[in-house]
Length: 317
Image (cartoon, rainbow, N blue to C red):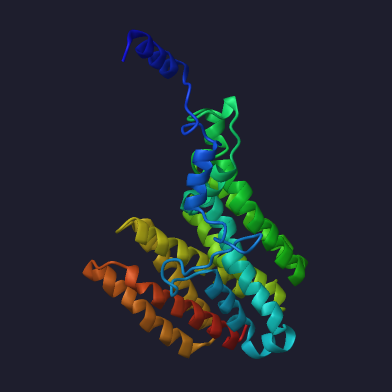
């Protein structure tokens, strides 16, 4: 290489000039992105991919909705609510509200979003590789605005459409969940409220309260709201104990919630559900006493949730 060629190469490197194969948006890069994302990868305008997240037997929004059905009485719910509304309720509180929460709480978990963004990104000077604007708009990966615009906002719109089909109580409940999700996202940057508390509200309180409203339960019933609150505390304590092994606050929340639920069964004169709950909860404290992990006990907590809800329908309240 001559001296002039070396000087030209150095000048090109210093000024950031690139060849056609290196510049984003050129034919070479578009062809490589097209090879990574084929045109036949989706047939939908709003592409929704569903999968089982973690264990299907852990306490989730779907099981909380089922608990609301049991608390209201399966017979009464079947007479007052159509099967179509029940299906829409499940789709709203579980996958759609779950998308609203997860899209802001863990946006980095969304797969392949950066391929779609790279395929359509413009090449402008202020969107150079590594620039703040490029990072913000997700030109080189799943940025904040790209995730919100392409993966989270469509899910929110569909959630409100489904909620509108159910009724105004579902719309207002969706607004509340949206607010909890936004607070959960802000928690990543500003300490407002522990994410585990927000998560327990989305998992238990919101779907159960919506079910109470739709199924015609007495919204002024202190005992029903006490059961919802106690299970919200139980889920928080369980998740905190799973995340932080041996956390006293989590174990204390479990003990408080279980004692409160047992007291409700005693006051409501429901001895059979109380006996079943005692057997289910005994497994938790045996595992704690032996120093074992609580991961395998999530199914027993879900079973206890359903048993206590069914017991509430049998109480004298």
